[in-house]
Length: 459
Image (cartoon, rainbow, N blue to C red; front, side, top):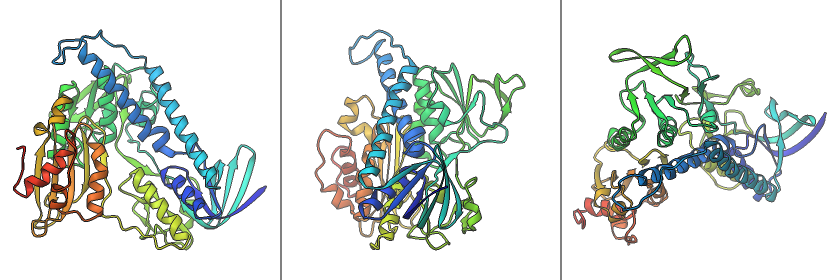
């Protein structure tokens, strides 16, 4: 058996793992990253990037379709057609370029990359099954960055016409009838795209409204848009499995049993941490429910073993994993790095999009909120999308901004401004007196702050 040694061993090359490997290499730490699949993890390969590519293609298709009939812009176009297999090939090309870029960045940082499946022997040793045989790696420090996977329902195991988001992002044809079990952000992002591409989409959600992790004010414009797109919602409804012949989803709602004819059933009821099957549980680490418990340095209960990303719990976000990866690498290098983030943006790429950062309304006693609608923003009007708003939560005693929330077209691009303002401790006056370019969507941020100060100009 071949052997290797290193100071830092990272299991998993998703956003957390590969960023940790790059930063560790930059700091001169002898590092090996082990990954069973392509670099980039779920995000680059079967998650964030592929889904946004599909959403973009669907948006472009929907724009052309809207121009094939009577429209206010005075543009005439023929009815568009889509070759989904070609779209998927384009998406795959983007993924290939990005995963290849990750591999190049690791190489540039002088971090070694091993393709294979790791099996933990103990907190200092793993055995990797590679195409060239077994490889034993000994290390001083280990990082668990194994991510998460789609969660199954006992009544709807994956296989056949029951698919996860992974298979949904690789479909070669638009299904005529797509039923989505789970009205969270993953299901609605894919469902909205498929509806724009011509699928008849039905969403079955156990809660009494879509996107239950967001407050109702933010989700109301999304629900209205779903209705415009012809998406059928079955709320407060439980999915019970497929019919005997497999042609329909059986569910139970407020009005009794319902049978939904389906060509594909996409199950998006959450993601589960990858903690089984590679020896992690044999280490006896302290757990936080199904997740690995960590401290402010992302250290586990075993000395010399760290964990980052989805395997450590919510929020399961790629940018959180990346930040943790940097913290671990710098901590191992002896730098004063610690998890002290005031805000982590969360973005839902539905139509319209949702962004939330920081405190929610009424979450902090004594806080107040102010709202400015996109209907009063000139740039929104010129984009034919004036639905939604920007909301700021603030402390009225000192004007300190505590949270930002927005729902509207392209608001994901505001998330950086929101997070920066919170990290720097911005006040309402700071934002209100910062000149924002006109005409832009971000003017609404300035206008929201001005409104809270009693000096709104355009409402």
